[in-house]
Image (cartoon, rainbow, N blue to C red; front, side, top):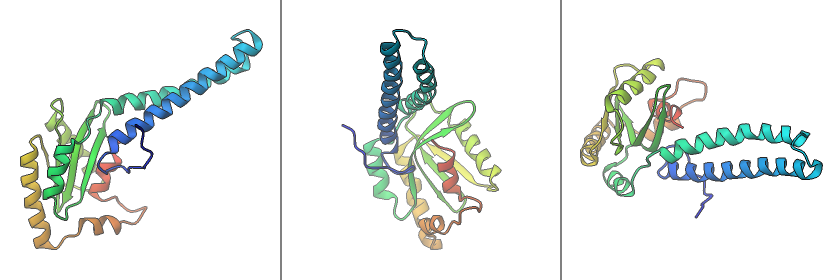
Length: 203
């Protein structure tokens, strides 16, 4: 049931992977916390011991992990059939999958994204997503990192998204752009690339 093969942020299957990790981590923290409390109770026949203090402290990482688990349980990962369609038409575009973009007000679930030549295109099958609000949030995050005048479009139709990927792949080919080389050339400490910013604002 549980696979421990690491899946990096932006790779297909990232959200299911993080769900599994969060489930295991939360269960582990909960068992340890309860175990510490019960050990103190059995040893001293009272809940008033140093073990109870340690157990209370253990509730902090357990609670944090539980919140993280709930967030990933609510997240909507890229569907397998959508992934197949995207992979068929992506060409040499750089595609990142399974975004859980966070903001102060809400979270946005995007199945896939690509960035090319001031074009940011995303796809979601989440019917509850406020597309306009999410586009504004991404635009704000990009502008705060020095990237303005970017065209940001979120598609809710997988076929239209794939049509746009075909257009962008032609643009990439015509301009001889290598998106992966752009990411590989990034130097730590310098301004992030737009594609990496999308990942950095995601869980």
